[in-house]
Length: 72
Image (tube, rainbow, N blue to C red; front, top):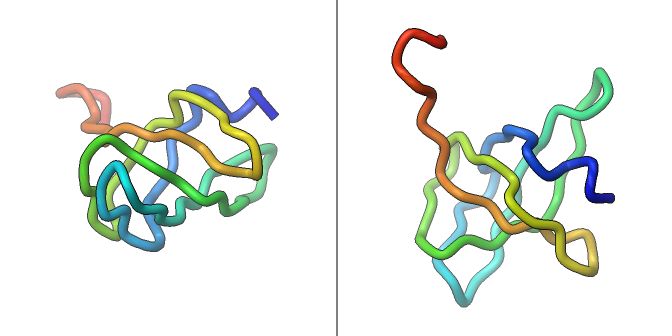
């Protein structure tokens, strides 16, 4: 399950902050999978995120991702 650490995804259900769960869609192995997600800050639907940790119960800890200039 730790194979998703470092994977980029998109928020499909807003994350309300540290005390709430949202949902993210991750591109894995040529397809996509959805995981419950938590973050230290609120992150809106449609935002890009980076998976930084995997928790029990198919939950991932994410951080907002902003692509470095010149990489998009």
